[in-house]
Length: 80
Image (tube, rainbow, N blue to C red):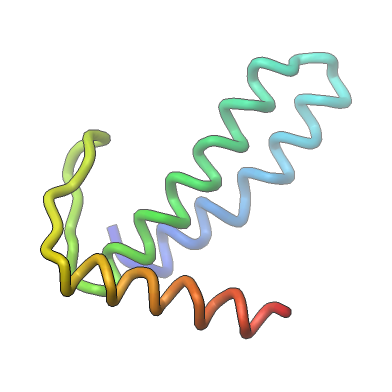
């Protein structure tokens, strides 16, 4: 899945989570919130070269982890 696809999935989940809360389905809302974070994290990892095929934790090098943290920092600074 591409970075753009992962980000699109991440961006759609908060709307679903809010809708689920309004409908009284807190458990489903929590699931949508979790997947928003999961897809966003997966997009960052994909961007720094860590491809994922499973839901389990990826094996990353120290350099990849540092690059992922730098990417998150840049994204947070851009939205601040």
